[in-house]
Image 1: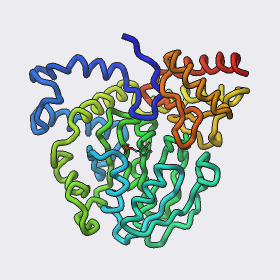
Image 2: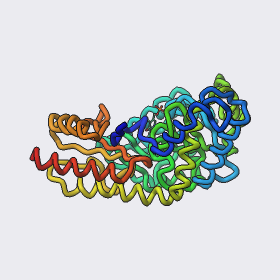
Image 3: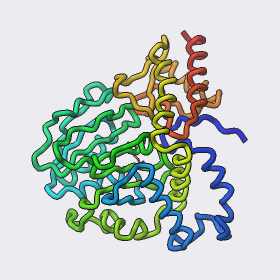
Image 4: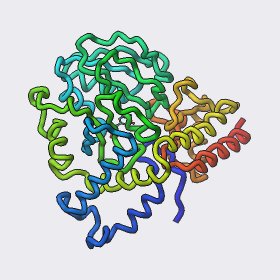
Length: 360
Ligand SMILES: *Cc1c(COP(=O)(O)O)cnc(C)c1O
């Protein structure tokens, strides 16, 4: 068996310990004589899996009691509709446009109400985060929406926008559990887990209780109403049971690593190796304004599309996979999520040095 260093943006690398544990429990989960994939979501064993998973993410993020944790399906993209359907009481919302995902979310919300795009970094291909300290927040906005870490462009909000008292909603798909957060600053935090937590198929929504109501837009399906899932403790219908089980194992793994403060330190150390190299390289160049750089997704280019393609191909041959940039950006992108070991980033930088010498 040989594993590569997988720099995919998502679905992405998972901790090897977690995969081994899951493999060991595949045929007989804790004496039940069956796999977690085969058991009832109403069984005692599964109830313990989902309850423990919820408690562990609460511990990791310090989630206060007046927030609910929901394990849902439909990916992050389904939240683009679910958020306005549930939160747009005045049918007005403010969106900060920092990349494709925020753009898509804003476009979807437009089906349900008025969307004000109060800031954008599209003028420079989303290579920075706009100043959000004093934005023209709409008087009657139901919420202010951000994509906190921009997976495609490699930018991250280092400071949350000043929402002037309005509810903040954040898509954290690609920075979920990468560093400590103050949950009380948000109304809704959500993300697809396939970037930094688990297998595709689960989306975790952390939502303040007062935002969970029956007063949703007319026609909102039962399945797209937060209250349905909050009341049923994420077991209204069959949940993505195996995915939740793996997420639970990742939460345990994160606790064993020392929690989110320790992860932040590790992620900073990892990202620094790559950014330091990019800053002095004569061939490769990072595409993001230094102060807004993501710790999770690092896009870079040579400035020559043929050379970029050659790099991606040769890197793959050297066991460094999925370094091709997003199709809308080109170049390269290294996603260095929680489960990417430090050694993986060092191996990437060593390879880049060698490539630079050979191709300059
Ligand atoms: C990947 C991604 C999405 C889309 O996630 P799906 O689960 O495929 O719908 C949305 N937002 C961000 C920030 C992402 O990285």
